[in-house]
Length: 528
Image (cartoon, rainbow, N blue to C red; front, side, top):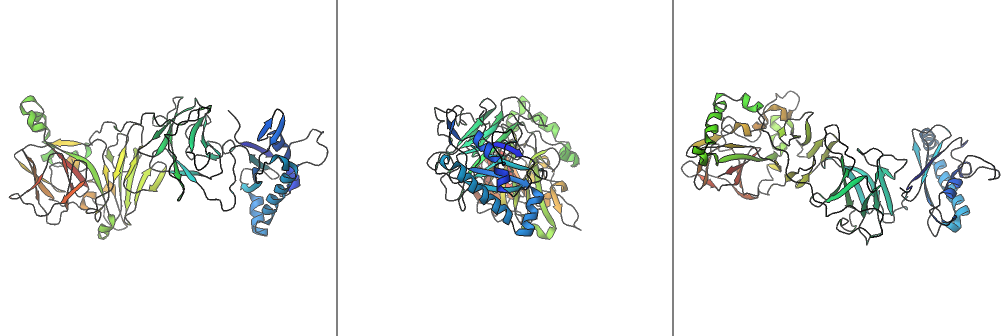
């Protein structure tokens, strides 16, 4: 693999702010001596014909001991750093003027904690670029391990042709936070100008598989060498390229790789990860906390499953999504945050060590995605891929519901319970019916302020008796059981249909099979 970043450490520099001491040692070059910056640039030309250099590198980053840089900033307001950059620029132009090809010479001086006194670190190469003063960026590159928390890697400027992203700042242009692959390879971005799409390639070509997720808008990099993380999941890194405001649209992954390219570009034709999650296993802990009424229900449920009662088992209620509330509406309760987690099976769970993706709402109505990598503000609609082969959707509520809710968290695999026709059942905080679907009925999801006793998250927006329902041949008959309970009707695709007003057992609201009812945090699908 070519060397995209030349990196060397110069030692025994008497004055790290002296351009001459860094550029070239005094005396004749015939004598064996330690190489300095001029020698390094001569030995590693940017272009050459045979053994003769035809072009040299013109962008150089220098790192000095951090304490020296700090002292200069304190005592001279950074004057010695500026003089060093200007002095090296002048020496570079004087000695290599015929090899610049019209390129600007640019030096950038920074501090580094790991350098000893008298050491200077230099970096230059094909993938080292220093922007011109006032140059506007073209893209921002960010990475994620879970598609929820994204961390910025670097900007890409219009004239910055190559950018190498990897694990080591000495061998790459930029280090990707959380890079999981060790030293086995790197990601190369190729920018041929505003009229060409930004290419994403892997180096070496056999190190990774690279595909583009059209729905998520990011590239997925997977190791070809079978590496797994601590949880046993295949190693992967998600890479997102965001155009700067006013720049052209996101680089199209459909642009084919150039035929002359020695390595493949990320192929958009690769199959997208399956949207089917792992099987959802309903929690049993909440059922154990209920009274004897729901615990006695498994017997008829089992009977409903045999051949005699097959039509009865077809009618059921499923928890299709969780409605994330605007917590500011409940400030008088002392609630400061509501946090809902998804475990590795993508089942709703209280915050804990087994959570791979969570969502938190604070009393300022700010929604955050929470993972082991940290937390990041998000907005609906959004799609997440916390594990390979699974999608988690965060849907935006309809305007008619936006006063109460920030988002709807669609559950990848909806848990469901059977219901018998011909009988009217009650759903609510104090009702045993469908209690196993009220997965947030616990104080573990709710963080209260100082001096406020903990309570179930269901107390926010769900009445003890919210509504009643009865399965019939033409759908479900819904009746309001509390005058203060907000009820919303959504269709099969979770699109808003109506806010349910007056509805009594004598004059019920008819809910078609497969449609949804929102009450409190719960979006229930009533199946025929």
